[in-house]
Image 1: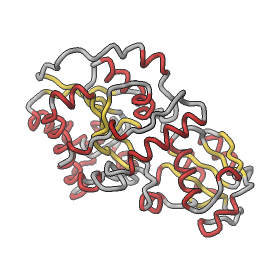
Image 2: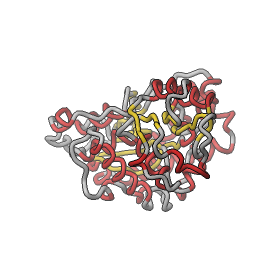
Image 3: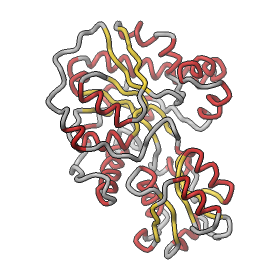
Image 4: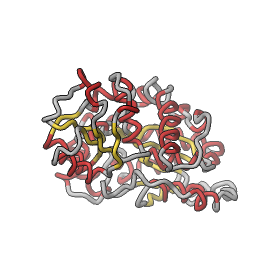
Length: 328
């Protein structure tokens, strides 16, 4: 998806050069929130109607970014206190290299938008997935898509060391699948849509989510902001929860407002949000999410990135960076 860069790792040197510390206590007259244009989410109704400002008692400044790595840099420098819908990989890279960030919630899920498609002539389904062993599978290496592939193969009893994983970015993987050069290709966004023309997903997004293989963006805050103003973080998450509930109850009322906030037309907004999920606070605190699943996935993604050369070193434990206590 062109509005977000999900696979590039934040250069360690760029990050560490700004780690001298975040400036002193925040003035409470304004809080800056990072977000993405052309990425429509239910909370943007509250953004546009200034519900956050009213409930939190401060002015929120919404600042658009090009990718999640830029968000991390801005948070490390102290320019941004909250990042909404930050990509998961930029967060993993950031905290692995010293960024003082904390994951406090799940912004949006989109399992159906990041998946692996088996070519229709391969004759392989989840029932006989072991037949993928010795076959070529196209996937971007060292990112969430790669990690999800490994978890899916493990769940289906496939030895991934016997599968010929070929590094291909999603557009190239779609071409390879169309030509039947690979038995399966993995990707996201428009490339995944093209892949679906030539086959079916090995597992649906819903099936993956049911066993804890998730695709999602997150809500992050700086450690300093969380420690000095926990009430504001809690109120931010509460307003988000209310906006998500309102959207589910009446999506048609939300679409025009969200479209304006995200810089999209209404039809594109509807089509994009049709594949989005906005989990409740209760769900986010459950075992598939901040109750254990996200901690496990953070470590798994970090290890995959190290093995692929996208990151120098993974931490032993990432649980200290994940805090469900602001979800009420």
